[in-house]
Amino acid sequence: MTGELGPDPGPDLGHVTTWLFDLDDTLYPAETGLMAEIAERMTGFIMRTLGLPRDAAYRLQKDYLVEHGVTLLGLMKHHGVDPIAFADAYLDIELDALSHDPELVQAIAALPGRRLIFTNADARHAERVLTHLGLAELFHEVFTSPRSTTRPSPTRRRSRASAPSMASSRPRPAFSRTPSAT
Figure 1 (tube, rainbow, N blue to C red):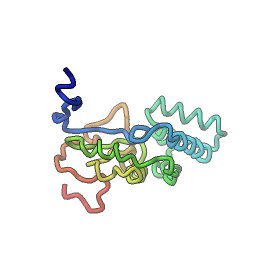
Figure 2: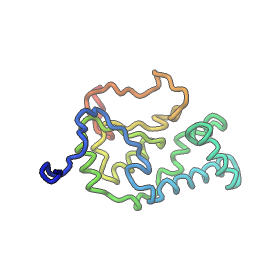
Figure 3: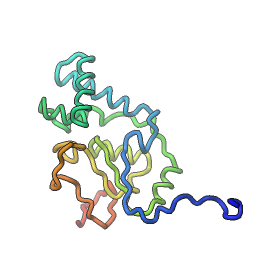
Figure 4: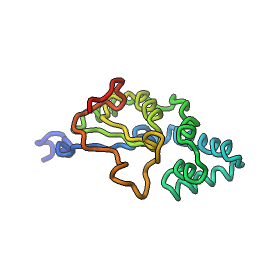
């Protein structure tokens, strides 16, 4: 009887009003090795900044990831590390391993409702990756960690005042070159 009904159109997603995507290893395959390269650069940053040998820097990186949810929060809390300096360690990473996927672009563009991105990296990394993938104009907002130069997310105790507002109903490109009217 399935032949009489035609191809399965898939689930009805019209009721979904907001889509939240994680950026790294989600919108591109983990097999690209980009996150492994970023992790290696984080280890190098810790080695240089704290004067640790590679094994100790790697262990500290992973310990802070487990203890704080993100490595950066541990580095800020215990060593006063500047989040921008930390992000600078991997900002210039080559993106050649990431390829533009027209089917992914089409599928995301077809989703109803708002499309949001979250990343533990900073906005500069998000912009570079999304632009390289041809996805930057498809997302209404990008939530980064650190969102500016403040505390990275996810945090275990997050106040309502520090949480990004999801109330805006007017879509905006993630990386608009003009100031928002809201």
